[in-house]
Length: 233
Image (cartoon, rainbow, N blue to C red):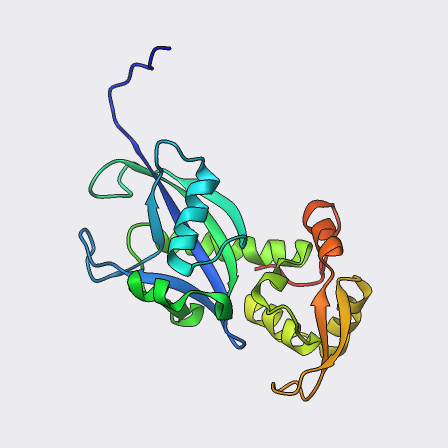
């Protein structure tokens, strides 16, 4: 089979916006670049598409290299293709965002890549068009978290309702009514009681739940609104 004739070479990059939650704040995983261009500045984690890779496989590879995690929530956000977005060579970036539990990460992988978790409220100015990427990813996260219950991806296997509420308060940067949140969450049938109590956190021995995986998949794939009352930013 022949090849397409073309004049210009255009690179395809993958940039990964990795959100994590530490129990108090929503954070962003960034790397400090040790190469030019923009050496010494903060950047999203990224890499170039290999000839034999599908796009999502490349994003999964980059995510694994940085965090040591597989099978995390990963969604394609958008393609960025401004002519001058990369000063070195014409590069189109396909952007993905991911949600990870910070406690599950591979700390050694982070050190290898000179990566750090940084609070969204303290996010430094990023290289190229990475600031815009993060802004759009946060907007998408807030939209999806209201409709598809993806906020559970940021929690440990067992959690209390107050811990879940804090996740959503971190995502939306707003305080939610405790009674209304508890009532709405319990009505979704997403929670399965473990019969255990939380004895170590500030939730004061609250009931521990785990996620109903079957129901969760339904909320991911069906046209079912999880928490539509949340204000979308």
